[in-house]
Amino acid sequence: MAMTCDLVDVFCDGVLSGNPLAVVHGADDMSAEQMLALTQWLGFSETTFLLPPADAVADYRVRIFYPGGELPFAGHPTLGSCHAWLAAGGVPSRDGVVVQECGIGLVEVRAEQDNLAFKAPDLLRHEPLSEAERAKAVELTGIDEAALIEAIHVVNGPQWQLLRLRSAADVLAANPAAKAELGTDIGLAGPHETGAARDWELRAFFADTHGRFVEDPVTGSFNAGVAIHLFGEGLVEGAYRAGQGQKVGANGLVHCQRDAAGAIWVGGSCKTISQGGALAQV
Image (cartoon, rainbow, N blue to C red; front, top):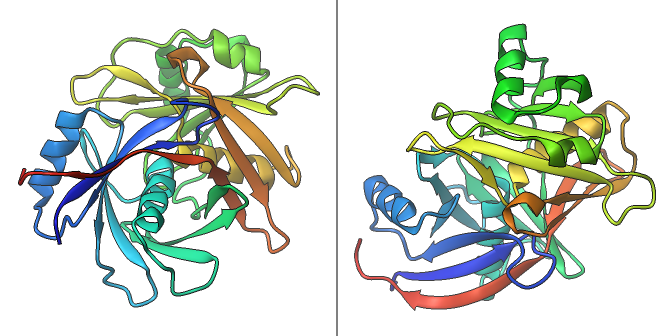
C-alpha cells in the first residue's frame, strides 16, 4: 500500500479553528524511529499512523506519536484518525461504531450527526495531587491560587493534572511559565456563566522536547479526563459543551455527554484539509 498523509482539523468550530493532525496511511513498513522523526519534523502536537489491527475486534490499529515519543492514547488523534480512516473508504465491522486499537486497548468511536465521539477510557489514576505537585502546577500554570478549587490527577495515557478553577475567566487569565520538564501535562478547567455559548472553558499545557511549556489548541484526552471527573462528582449532568484554544488563536468546541449506561462520550467536528498526499520513505 502506498504511504500517504492526510491533514485533519479536529474539534473545529469554523475554518481552521481546531487542532491539526497528520494521519499517515500505509505505515506498515515504518519503524518507530521513523514515525517519531516525521512527527518531530511536522511539529504538530501529534501525528498518527494507521495499521492493520492485531485484535480481531478492531477495525484498524493506530500508533500515536507526539514530538517526545509515543502515546498509548490521545483524544484528538483518535477522532482525526477515525475520520481519515472513514474518508479513505474504511467500513466498520459493527454498524455505526468504529473500534480503534491503540496502546491503551480498544476504543469505540461513533458518529453523532455531523460529529464523531469517542468513548472515554477509564482513568489510570484519579486522585488528588500531593501538596508538592499542587504547588508546582500552580507555579507552572500561573493561575491565581485563590481561584483554585481542586487539583486532581486525571491520567488516561497522558499524565494529566487537572486544576479546577472557580470560573472560565480565571482559566483565561492564567499566565503559564515558558519552560517545564518533559512529561509535564497540566490543564485548567472552569465554568462559564449560565447562558454562555459554552459551559466550560479549558486550557491544556505540555512540555515539548525543547523544554518549552506549550499550550495545546484543543485536547481530547484532557477533555475526557475532565468529563469523567465532572460527571463523577456530580458537577455536570447529561451533557455540556467545552471551549478551548482562545489564547492560541483556535476556536475548539468539544461535546461531552454521559449516556444512559453511564459511558462518557467526547466528540466534535472533524474536517479534512488535505487528503492523500504521497509520502516518500522517511
